[in-house]
Length: 181
Image (tube, rainbow, N blue to C red):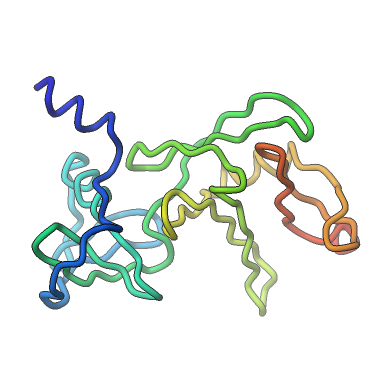
């Protein structure tokens, strides 16, 4: 039991260092809400989902589960993780936003873990993300995004005034200030 706990504290395995042969695609999908499916059925064991989430890797636009001996393709509808909560420490430019994902990862937004907001070109609806590790992002859930908007600030970005978020000394733009009513 102690060795399993010690392994969990080390973080995810170094999948970026592994280059096993591709073994084909697996009928596994991660829905936009973070639900993992295998053969069309939700995976109901949180421990199993956490295990799979620790060996996911994104190469280009494709997602894989990777071990030292095999690499299998999976489908990800949007992002492999969902940020379900966050904590705030500090204020203003010294503020730090620490996110928690649905699989238990925690990450403090900053230069190595940027926040980005994609907007639907037709509706303008925002989809906010935070980088969790390598090039794997978490979709920030709606309730958390609403809370983030409450603590947002206006700042100069690329010569314009933007509404956005500060974390770890970096400003993350959300929307141009001029577009706010």
